[in-house]
Length: 435
Image (tube, rainbow, N blue to C red; front, top):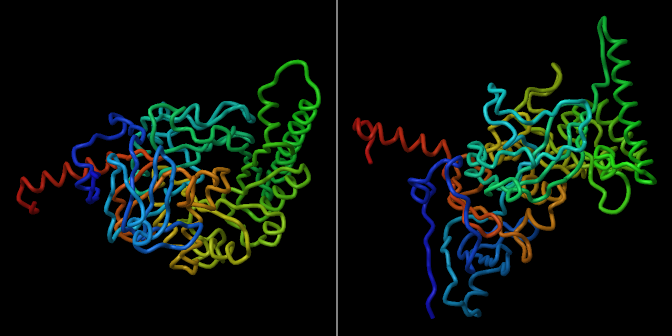
């Protein structure tokens, strides 16, 4: 019996000569079974398996177990590819929950920005429609293991609805894993001081009343209507009932979080707090209402002048200890999505359990975004969206050597690797470095 055996090499060798994504081809669908053998398999949902084996066909994971137990007992077809991953680490693809990838290309060039619709409330907007599948930023995130990401429009009280995308595809439809992941709300600031405080509080109250009104109208619309209203239909997706979508509420201060969670509870909505810088101050409410938090990055100064210097870095550990479901995003730092695993490594350095850290950018992130049945762990029946590294993926020195999205082998080349290779060649020619 014949089968193909492949030895994975480093990213620098495997991707030499490929083009940046704005010119490169999308990976073809998987057309033969693949067995990944010999790696340390980080299943996330279960035990870590030394010298493991993971198989997948048609983009779906099949076998997961110990190579010594499984490989001698199975027969392989002639088209089966066995990839030797001895000494490597195998993880589910990482997930950055909140980004503007594909909606923003060059922050200073207005023509490349498509993240903010005109108007204060545009719930009918679905983010995936505006995503640029040829963005040169997506491949830089992909090269560090970010294979799935949430796309969130910004601006206004209701900027639209989030979408969950794969990091490879010809078109927006190809990229879209979940087109409507939930409604986004930017909760107003609650405290004001100074000469305009009274006016600001009035505007705050007006914004909250406008939210209440649009939700009342949407509830009435679901009961009876004659003319179709796309905005109210979009709001209705977040109302109680079958297939209720979550409401992602951008809120950072203690007052914002408390007000937003209580407001959502009154309307029987399913809230997710995004940002959550003060979430550690209201863990009792978050835990009792089972409200998840998507932490808006760790690379921040303390929120208050008298705050502890490590306050941002310890937030994940505090939420984990309090029993609050959470995930981490690099939101607010466009083009830094690739640094997600290193940021989580920082949280581990400040007391977070390593397994909890890994869940926070894989399975917990997938569950919060509503795709946990397909992604986030290495289990039979889930999508074969996988990452191979030479070391612990949370270690800043680790290198992503290979990746698959739903079984498709992904080219990890990007603009940065092309520039790296270009200038390495320059200094070779100048005999400053050796080959």
